[in-house]
Length: 592
Image (cartoon, rainbow, N blue to C red):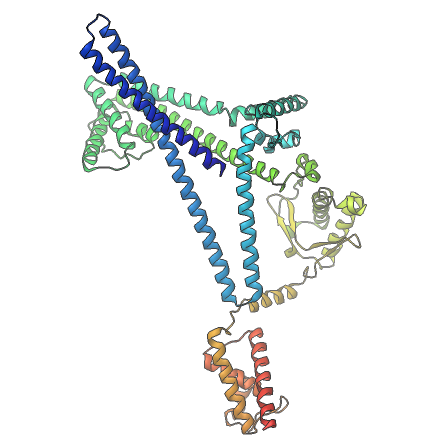
């Protein structure tokens, strides 16, 4: 909200300034008319000249202010559009979440959707609060030693976390004093580092001052001048006129968003002129324009037997164009690096101020070394000898304990030495693999890197301080059963609001009929008297016959709904419905 207020103040100031300048210009115009009519002295010309100069300066200032006002209007439109898009996305996510929860028809799904919406709203409020805080923070953050660069990976790895990043923006002291004090403290802290802050200031020159980017831009400008000078030095006067007019047209064409019919006709003449220049000089000017203006020009090659001199000139020109292309690609890469770095460090600054990262207990983790394994035996796991396999198990045990126990602060909590944990994990892996309770599918072996990358079946019991393997390790049957259970759980239920009425009516009519006819059969009694169950022996062996009234009723429901298969959950629900309805009908009949 503060940025909107600040923009509004700037907008009002510019509007008032433009109105004031217009009144002053009108005053100068009236004054000039008065001098022309009434003044006859020798200083008349001098006064008119001075008035014209003042008027031109004020008109230029009006143009600049008007341009700034337009930029502010564009920014306001972009902010409104961004806010509108965020609102639409938020509503769409809410609709999807609640729509899916209603389709699942479960109370817990609705509650999950509500809690997810609350989390999103809370995150949005947190972000908006941070944006407002960030504007206040940036107003007092020293521009010569900005805080965000202290959170770059290279700076964190070498210097650890700077203790002077956070500032007291609510301080009653003047903002200039807060800024100067923070700048002095940060510079003093950088001077205490081993390289006296060279890494930080090099990053500052590259990201903030953009020295390397400006050098590349200067090199591109010089290369363009060199190419154009080479082109004009090897052209006749007529060819120079064609080249200059083509350059002017290219600027106009690329700067125009709407291509009119007249402009398209001129474009055809422009392509023809480039084709003529290419055939006469051998210089691929269209490729130069492609790179400079980021277009894709296709010329008509006119073969008229170019001379050897033209071929040599064309090769030299093409070499310069290739060098320009490489410079353009380099500057694009540099610009992407700057943009990505700024976005990342600003996000890290957000995490720091919202206490989502770099908390006090994690300060020491900012300078931890990357734990990596050293690869060996770059071949398939099945071709390794038992000694080589044990060597890889030991390497993974050291990596696993170092990463998850040492850096994860597990050793400090359980008072256990690192070597003991490594030895314990190594024995578990080696002995389990030999006993085939750990198989190849339980871990990931990277042949190219020569190391075990991952092992998801490792578990740790904090009560017994022992490593052990998951129950699923080395047991493909258990995994197959788990997959089947997951697949069965993914079958869509047939009991919905539309079908539930049909199901209840079918069960009720069936139960009433069998109770009145006294044909109800216990689960132990087979329906041998039912004509529908009189099938041939050959068929009874192949096809399952329902053995109870409940099963027969469920089969009738399947036929009614025209479905072939029911999930176990649906069968249990239908069976429960049948028992409840039967009990109610039977009780009512006994009371009558």
